[in-house]
Image 1 (cartoon, chains in turn red, orange):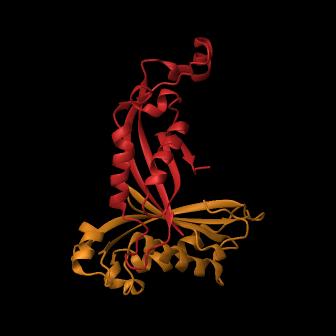
Image 2 (cartoon, chains in turn red, brown):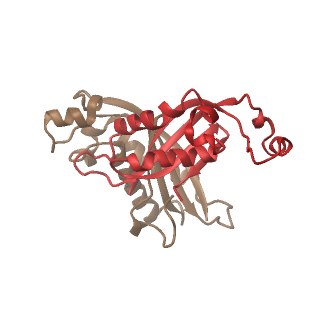
Image 3 (spheres, rainbow over the protein chains, first blue to last red):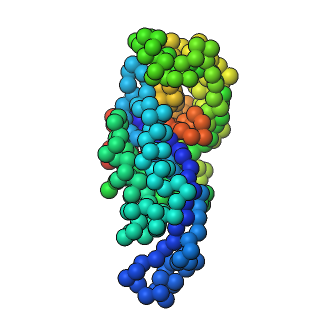
Length: 135
Length: 152
């Protein structure tokens, strides 16, 4: 078993707000991230696929295909978007980096033709990232 | 258990081409990487060893000896080389970074476990970056791992 990872970057804006909490509670929990006008990040997404090396090609999956899949499923949906307003999944879920990683897993897992999705790593800034293994 | 990772860099040329495929299929599968003249990368290799901290030295393994093992087993064989032409192991295998990652794991595992290995630490993982956009990780087959350790 070997793990292959593709890294892509995208930029998006978001804010954190839970409508079931009072404005004061939202401000206390989310701090500056509660600003309703939103703020943005340059996200780095790392998608890891696990599989066996094909003895003919020497590859687990074609990285060009994975790049295309990431463009179609993730970047078209999230790159240069206001996540709260423009991405349907975040109409009812707070677009935290945690929830984004889970959402990206859900988008990609059923679409992988070869190999098995192993990990989504989403970095919000160079100092902060989230790993999700689908469980 | 403590995991220690040391990073190394090397540069090499390769061409992705499978003798089992015809010219059209090779071009389709490997794209630009099938160029018969080859192309190169600056590889970033991360070697992770796992072990207990030695109470005498406070270290998991002697880094100088780890460096020696990597220098001898990996860098001498692959740095500034053409993988297809200069590396025996790729005479009959395509030098994809997947295969290179597995090859490096097996070369170092033999060395780290054998007599004169850098310590009782064991090789836990090889991570090999081909470009900034992709990397490959290999932590051995299940029978090479310690029982109960989850691959992550």
